[in-house]
Image 1 (cartoon, rainbow, N blue to C red):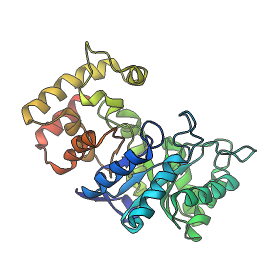
Image 2: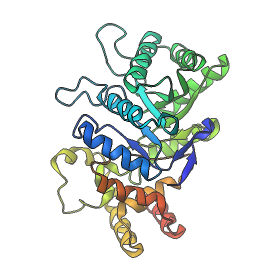
Image 3: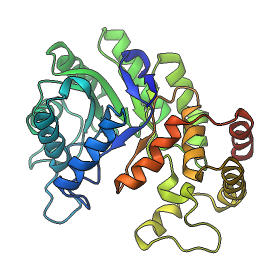
Length: 316
């Protein structure tokens, strides 16, 4: 698999980041190990998880995805080959500091994640989403403390507005602290404005790498369901979030271009994303190795620039 540099971190990461929300949810430990092995065998080295994954599932208190990854890395002896990203912010214990981006929560949550992951350090430790109740100075100093202690290598964030991202970077620079090196935005071929019109400029100015989530728009860009087709029940509400006008404009051409090129729509959509400025690697969450193979082919193939340019113009 091809590699990209993860922004100013200098870390070399595979073009596809494997999201692991499904571990401990609809994928048990055995299936997760098989997927992790398959991903690594095909050159993948970039894993994204979070301490809360997946606490919405029955009998899952959170932390299960991290535990599975930790067991896998230990059993394979490959921690040095993996670029590991996880997140904090969600409620993980009772008490006033049980959730959020306060110093006490960040430091304790990091220790808990390190224990579950069975590692001495986390490559990219991320704010899962913003926290208006805590001063950004406290949050950014806490991440800097973890970097100084060698417990994390870089800090990142997810779901931050452009204004809050810029503010955090300004505060960090002013104090000589570690700033955010990565961001996870909601970004795909049919949902571009929020990132491109607001956040991308901050990323370009600060050397921040984007690791977009939902790059296939909840399965919409796979082409498996579109006009006249009903998505699976667990996807129906999710895909409704996208503007129907944009979807109806983009999808027919995406499907036609993919057919002309002899590739799957998802492969063309992912290749388009990989070509966008500041994007290091989209986060994908596969449900099987067969699906993962389809996704990985998007990082192994080259697509004509005219097809990518047409999609850019059409979905602008």
